[in-house]
Image (tube, rainbow, N blue to C red; front, side, top):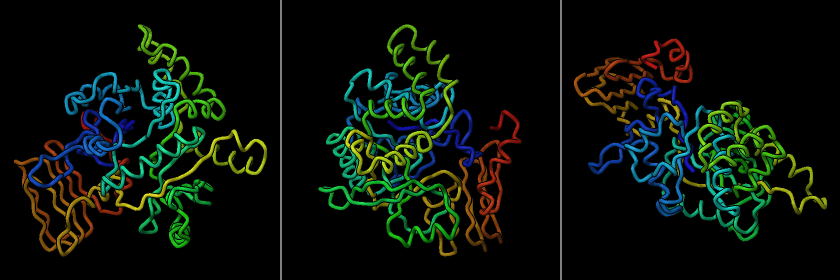
Length: 374
């Protein structure tokens, strides 16, 4: 299941309410191929992992038509439409409820629509390992952690402990999850060699996730069971629209992964350990980019010798350093002279100009926009 319900406000003005970042065709694939959306790239990445008929997208119901038009290989049944966004645990829970009704032993992976990952072949091998771990023990909750390349403060971290036998030192028991650290702690995590970036990708058994929700977030579980009961019946839409907006809005990390990890530590070495969930992580040593802001999008553009990056229908930078220009308007030429650390994004009806170090504050402008420009 690919989660694709975000609004992408940090990539405004290209990302809009009517065409969010995961559906904007602004990713260059080279070799004279047309630009692709992040969602298209995420689906292509699954080619050697899960066959097309078993791929799902969980997204806003309002995006269903856009996705069907852009990705006709996904049927209506493969698009799980949320009436409103209720954070990641409910996207996961809805998928688990639907799949468990079809197959009580269903195992599924959770991916997100805003990642770029290379090489794809290595990604596929590690995803298969995740499936194998759950197939051999249905109580496992598998997360994927990225081997860090710098002391990032914008990601959560996963601390691993002992290796899981037979995995060639690729899978480990999880010691704990850590929220976004300050610079000092991030450097310490990098140097320790036992932390990875929390990628937000998982593999687990649908029934196990529903049981975790029953224990850790029963109000979500109760609502999802009502939705599951109505799924595939004439009452499906009515019950979904009635129940889903009232589910507690919380992330899967807070709702499931962190309490499951604490429980794992609490029952370790006791008779209760045998039947409890087992939280583990597969370390991914590959190139991973979370395209969640304009600076991260800039990492997809080859820089010139002064660090400038231009992805534009018509544009140029002169006597600039570390400046980025992005435009999707072929009838509008963008010229930037003598600037440093600047980001310029132009569309047909809006232009954004901001210092690179203010990119995380873009939501301030977004909140003040006229409704027609959001």
